[in-house]
Image (cartoon, rainbow, N blue to C red; front, side, top):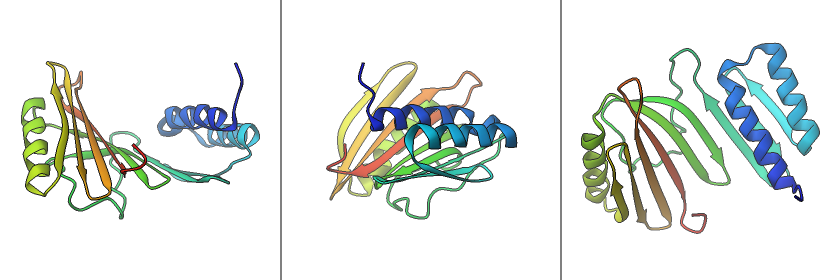
Amino acid sequence: MKSTPRCILALAISALVLTLPACKKAQDAAVNAAIEHATGAKVERNGNEVTVKTAQGDVHFASTENGGSVSLPASFPKDVQLPAQYKVNSVMETGGAQIVSLSTQDAMDTLFNSLSSGMEGKGWKRELATQTSDGGALSFSKDNHNVAYYIARNENGSTDLNINVSAATQQ
C-alpha cells in the first residue's frame, strides 16, 4: 500500500481527534510532535482547540472535555437549521467545509422533521431524506452550498447530530 501525504495527514488528524478531549499536556506534546514529524504540518494547540497548518491549508478542531460545549464557528451559515436546544461537542473546519457534532435531547423523529421543515422553509432544496429506527440522513442544497445532516440515537438517550456544510463543488 502506497502512503500519500494526504493519507498520512488523514491518519494523523484522526489520531488527534480521538485523543484531543482526553489528552494531558505531555500527551499533547507527543501527539503534536508525531503529527509534525509524519506530515511536516505545524500543530498549534490552545486548550481544546487545535490547528494543523499545511501547505494545502489549515484544519481547525475544537472539542469539548468533561461534558462542556464549544461555540459554533462565527462563519457557520445563519440559515442552517439547528435544534432549539443543543450542545456542540466538536467542530472541524477545513478548506471551506465545516463539520459540527451536536447532541440534543430532541427525539430523533422530532429532530428529523424539524430539520427538514426548517431547511425547506429557509429556501433549501431537499436532495435526500432517509430514516431508520436508529438514525437518519438529510441533505440539502442552496446556491453554492450543501448541507448534510446525520442523525443517530445515542445510548444515553440523547440524539447525536452531525452537520456537514460545504461548497457545492466539494461534496
